[in-house]
Structure formats: C-alpha cells, structure tokens
Image (cartoon, rainbow, N blue to C red; front, top):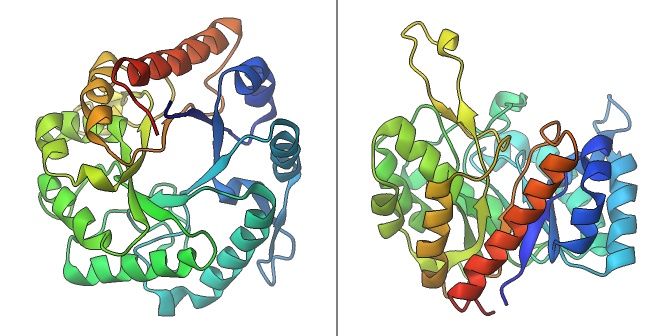
Length: 300
C-alpha cells in the first residue's frame, strides 16, 4: 500500500502527546530541515544541529522508518547569485542530514522565503513567468546534488501575481527535468479555491498528475474579521484543525489518478494538539487516509 506519513513538529509537547500515534500509526515521517538547525555563530550564520535533530535522529534509528524533507525556507524563487552564501550553508546542512536521515525526497514551497536576505514567515508568490520558472529549476538542480528526488509544493498565497488557475501550467514549466516532482497539497488547493472563487476540481484538472510524488492533507480555520478593513474573512492554511470533508473528497478523487504517488502525509501544527482527544483525532485521520488509499487500490 502507498504509505501514510505524519509531519514531526519541533515542539516537545506535540511530540509527547502524539508519541503513541507517531510510533503506532505513521509509516514514515516528514520534517522541515530548517527546524533541525540552530545558528551556532551569528557572525557566520553557521547551521548546526539542535535538540530536535537529535530526537528525530534517535527516532530514525529506533524505528528504521523512512524520512522525507519538506522545507519552507530554501526559497526556490530567490536568484542564486543574490543568495549564494545562504544557499551554500543550506545545502551543506542538508547534506549532513542526508547522511543521517536518508531523505527519500526533498520538497519546498513554490515561492520566495528569503527576499533580499530577510526571512519571510510565509513564502511570497512568484510572477508566473519563464524567468521565475528558470530560477526555480536552478534551485531544484542544486538540491539534486544532495537529494536525488526533489520537488515543489503548490503553496497558499493570499494575493497572487496573475490568475491562480494559471499556476498548474507554471508548475509544469518548473517541473521539466527528470526526478523533479509535485507535492500536491490538497488543503492548499481548497484554501485558494475558497479565497479566490474557483472550483478545486478545475485546478486539479490542469495539473500533470503523473508528477505527483506526495499528497498533503491538513486543516485550517477562518481569519479574524477584524484583520481587514473590509471585514472580509479568508480561509487560512493553519494546519490547526481537522481535515475538512471537501479535502477528504479531493483525496478520494485525486489519489487514484496519481500513478507515481509515493506517500500521503497528514500535517498538524505544533500547539494545536492539546490532549488525548486531539491525539485520538490525529490517529483517526491517519487511519482514514489509509482507508481511502485502500479503497482505491493505492499500491506502490
């Protein structure tokens, strides 16, 4: 069967509350590499292992289960020449981690996470141009020197530089080389559809589903009406709630159409698992994802 994985968050309470779920329910683990590092020398910005790196490495040794990497800060859309030092340090850190975790693949968000040397909390959207696609392809090529299979995730943006339904075509321009893949985040599709007024099925129909290596499912919540002068409420990709039913329906419809799918990952943010009831809900979501894959003959 296609395996079902869980994100590991750098939060002791999260890991302790979900300890039984992590050991008993997840076929593989997904980590954001940057959550495993700390800056040891601010003058050099050298990236060294933190305490969660040790904890996750111990889990890898104890379970023998696969790990995959899903970053936020690689900043696929940043021109390499403008960020050469940061890129070199990042690649060196991933290379060290690859020797320990043997990541099956590395993906990152499609966007800019480090504009002008700063750190954006969320990746900023790219112009959907030939130049932007070429910049992202170069970044993927650089990462392939460390992890052979790489890819991008369709991101959530709260503003877009173009038509959101043009993004599948743009993703196709980025993912042209061998062993470059799409991480299809179905909650991201659902969130963008809610906020920009299109049908999720229309977006999915424009994707090359043969490129999909992994699917993400997660939940979200509405924004505070007081955040915008208009009072408009947006759906947020907060990973802070149960997977909504429309996303489960998308998984049922899409997973059987992805011939190269290698995993379905449940995302849940740290600080949103508060006790036994939440842990039980996460366990059931992993089991539901496994049932969906089983119902549709989801085999590797």
